[in-house]
Image (cartoon, rainbow, N blue to C red; front, side):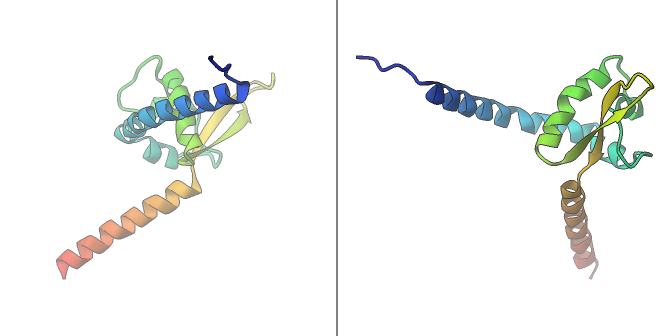
Length: 127
């Protein structure tokens, strides 16, 4: 006799499937972010809050009319992994808002470690 699946079992199976799918996609997202130099572009933001997706897109060497909306799909994944932070800012008198992204403390700390390790390797080679 077949047992019926409970909502909790269904939710658990869905969560596992979604986690697996995201685990397959995230490396491609991270690779694209690195290839586009997103972290460097965002770290040079003039505002302390960060930059919107359209502002980031305007700094990319290859311009594309839909790049801002494409970045809006990529950037939240980087926020979910604590590589970026996300804030909301008001953009006009009608209280319209947009998301702005900044490099996270975690990313700054990790990239500084990598820089220091690379610097140490160069110093060791020079000795």
